[in-house]
Length: 65
Image 1 (cartoon, rainbow, N blue to C red):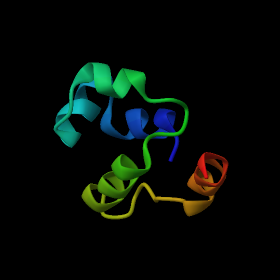
Image 2: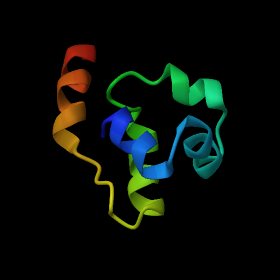
Image 3: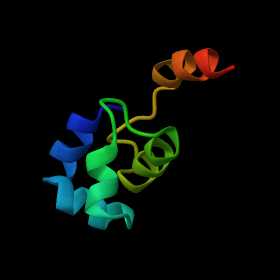
C-alpha cells in the first residue's frame, strides 16, 4: 500500500494518524510503501477501499531473509 494513496484517502497526514491511532511523526516516517501491519489495519478500517497487496511486501520480506 502506498503512503500517498493512504494520506489522500484520509485527507492528510494528521487525519491519517488520528484514524490509525498513531502519532503524526510515525506517519511521516513511513517510506513510499507503508508498514505491512498498518496496511492490514487500513484495509480493515476502509472496508476494502484501500487494499493490502502482498506483492508489495514479498520483495522486502525476501531480502530480509
